[in-house]
Length: 252
Ligand SMILES: NC(=O)C1=CN([C@@H]2O[C@H](COP(=O)(O)OP(=O)(O)OC[C@H]3O[C@@H](n4cnc5c(N)ncnc54)[C@H](OP(=O)(O)O)[C@@H]3O)[C@@H](O)[C@H]2O)C=CC1
Ligand SMILES: O=C(O)C1=N[C@H](C(=O)O)C[C@H](O)C1
Picture (cartoon, rainbow, N blue to C red):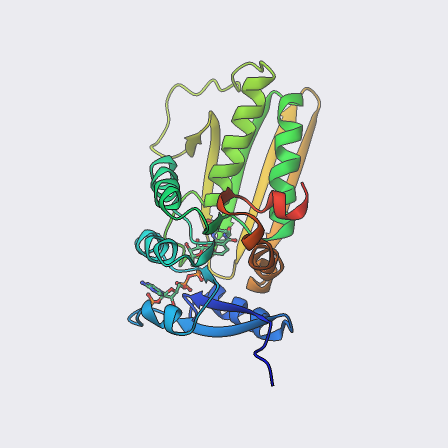
């Protein structure tokens, strides 16, 4: 009997909340084979021993860079959901990829299809409104604030408004308690809520004279991230180098 033609997939952070959902999705896909489930204190070499072709990383911002350096240096494609990527980190990943041009890395602030569309719609709407603010709401175990999704949404909105020559967002605040007006990203205020019972949610609030528009996305379950991750897993070998966001994998 010949060897299976299924794509060999490893998962880093396999016992985590999202990692478990990804393992289940890979396991259920007939064209994919789950060959390694790696978590804290397991050896990264297990991924090499299992001959993983693509590895999905949902771990922690403190460890993801080490994981990526290892994967790229071994020519293993990486699909990364872990947050904490700023420009300096992205530049370091590009540097590693320059030395291993065959490897592909996809880093996405959010793999839920609806969240990607929420970001797109917000970017499109931004120039038509005087005001825009973002409220992101997550489970209380989240390490980073604001969420990677909210930060990316704010950057996209800020860039769209700048390109359209929009005025600064009006705000007459002259005295405030620290944090009362949220954090500023790309000129946009971002507010972070951490609440037991939640998974991952975001509202983009837009307002202008006499009307408001609210764009809201809710991940009600971690399985919401799996279809986007599998899009990346299946497509990454055709996209060597770095891709940020799953938009091109969705033909957006
Ligand atoms: N881009 C996206 O669509 C999404 C991104 N995320 C992001 O993904 C990350 C993980 O989220 P979540 O699943 O909720 O977090 P969890 O804490 O539930 O899972 C992370 C897992 O990774 C493990 N881990 C820690 N260090 C290592 C390591 N060095 N090697 C392998 N595994 C390790 C943790 O172990 P231990 O618990 O023992 O430390 C844990 O099992 C976060 O950054 C989150 O923001 C989350 C959802 C969607
Ligand atoms: O930590 C989470 O849970 C999530 N993290 C990502 C983020 O920071 O945007 C994606 C999603 O919001 C869930």
